[in-house]
Image (cartoon, rainbow, N blue to C red; front, side):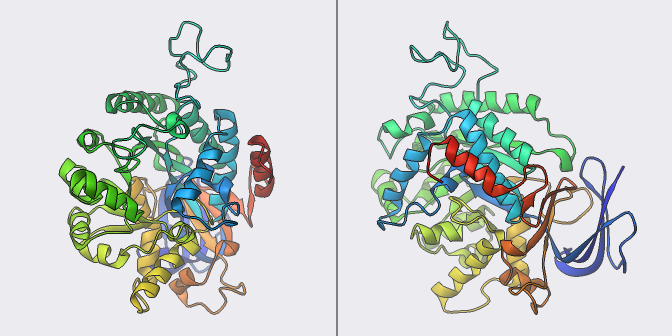
Length: 470
């Protein structure tokens, strides 16, 4: 069996095409992409407006969404915001995290994304005990009496995220994150205990077990039906000692890292290692075309040359970087040096693929005093192909062999009417997303999830699960 969609206008081969007929097989993989088809065949769903390959959200912390609209009252800094974030992280358990993530992933789909890189570090129980191992006295919720590991309960938080993604219909690269120190040469704090694996060997062993478990539980088959993938992440130079960084060159697949988000991070790194975070990573051998540097806000010319020369991916998160007053990173200079730009929503101050894209160009204009720093075509590429490269997922373009993932934008709304072709990328918002398809299946239509229903109701359930007033 096959599924067909006829798109009035679509982005194909990095250009606008008219009358595009998409055919997907029963795995949700594209088997044909035809252009110049004047009318919709009787067996195809007609998709009006402008169709894009679906956006790729290359950087997400799902539970951060629960902070939206709750951290602005007293101003503060990134570091004070982080304390509030820790208080929410402390509330998470596998069952509640699945409830939260399901709502967040549903909203992502409504916002135009069908793939996400989940930068995940809340691995263990609150006291740092791995799920599936012996629990403290009086707590029989997890683990076994003799202290052995219960394989069915191991990786409970990671499984919760994977189940949430699969149920929502979003493709996930779960970026299993190494978090060993609270700051350079500092122990983890009590709030961070559940993030850590003790040593780099502890992380590597747990990561290998997670990869093996997920390969069995969520096998990677055809592009369109493979929804759960595993990758790795270095939380930051603050959280992983420089001596441990070369170990990440041993891993296959994508490696992500928070990089130079704050000046204080650069200052601490310079004091400890006599080098910038980028230079420390470069010395470790992990700065390659498999690396994705998230934020990359406060960089020197030398840092830009290192990242560009390696063809690393750069994940800009414009709405979060503005919300947290992080600053505006040198996106244009990085792209010109050879790095590949992609986009993420990070703490989900909004979940709107179009606003993130517009934020990239807006930031460039504000810091440079020039318009058109990134062309509309370049912005679309960052949102789609750039993210697909960062996460190494079979998406990002409407072409045979890739997953049938796309988003349709209204061209007749009060925001978009009159927009010329691909310039709609600079006028539309998530309110203009009329249809989101992943794996050949409609996931969200007019803001309502096809299977999960009203997304606001999912959030009401999530806030109730965490005993937070929603």
